[in-house]
Image 1 (cartoon, rainbow over the protein chains, first blue to last red):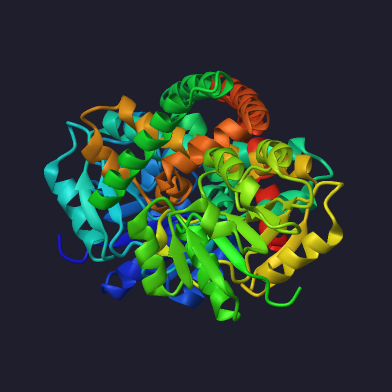
Image 2: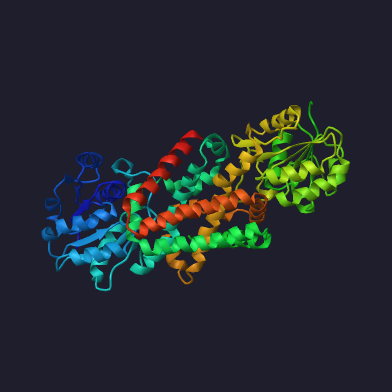
Length: 286
Length: 286
């Protein structure tokens, strides 16, 4: 399909950045959002050609709809737009968890409309249309998780659109995606937030804690400054993999605590040395 | 005391960087290390004026001795140099934990020699003299933890030397230091290493994990690439505060896991929102 018409629902950081990049590639982009203020900024910044708060109107002409709302809002949005989608339209989303949303969307879509799950690896702590950036996806991974029944042509079309943003496209099995995302991204987010909340157990020590906060703390907890709504949704839509991962981490911490208590330097050293070797390998392979 | 003679024992990243900065301030610096190769590099790079592998020789003329070896080696080094120190000499160290080492050193020092505990907030993942940098301490905090019996003149002398490196000097009670350092630095290090080791539970998923590793993972686990020897020593010299902190973190994670399992979005959201507010405050105050 040449120059498919695009609708982006949710013009925040991701939706707004996507609009900037797709419009720069010459595509026609309609923006839909419940927040009129965000839509005004999206039009002014050139993220979208036209804007509406009406979901039915917004998707009526669309060949490809990008769902860029918070994950837990997606099922309600899809239920609302389903009767208004054109035959042959393609729906894709940008959520960080794919199993939950894939199951919901697939049940809601009319015949002749296809869903391709997507996940751009392009978060940042800031959110909202004001933080949108035409280069947000450049050189980042963008993962698609098509179901077995998804037509390859639908995947190709959406992947081709995303390549215009400068992202590197890959395809992954949906279950692998959620299990791996839990340990590489979701569990670290929960733990980073926990590390910050731990400081709340030391009232009156703010000054000393501040004096001892080095670059390590800033980096380790950077993701704890992320959007709380987005991360609550991620936890609730990938609960099994995330809670299992946290419990596995806790079991490892139990072992380290026991090793420290018995003064077992060899075991504590092995723990740190294994982490260093594994991380250095991962970083070298990126 | 004008232009005190300095001896640095252990010319690695910290000792070597300290030598570069103190020599630039016009001071006379002797370097001692058990590794001849490190000493040669230290002389060649201008970190020290002269070098020796002999501890007794190295400290005989020193007014101020900086102990920059790994923490667990310090007691043995102090026992070796104690008989050779001049009356009035001052000993200081650069370890990340202060209670353990302070107790050991105080017991070993001869009358008329004073100890001032120090902790530069200037780590990095690289170690060794090759990574030494004259600006390593610039604009970083450098914390001293003098005991009640330490003469103020000894603290002033060492603090004055450290100010020449560009560091910002503060003074902290030794117990507060170790408790606060545990929650702001030591526990995050252990947990970051745990997050990396968790990935080892998913054999065969290296490629998918790599594809999903974004900037969040790189930042959160950056400190997991630190020196394993140094971190094993830190854990073994601040065991109570670190294990207590890990267990408090685990209790918080238990609560989040329970909230995720029962689908309690409000509780999960509150957890992330509290962390974001607290971290944003800490970062703003740095």
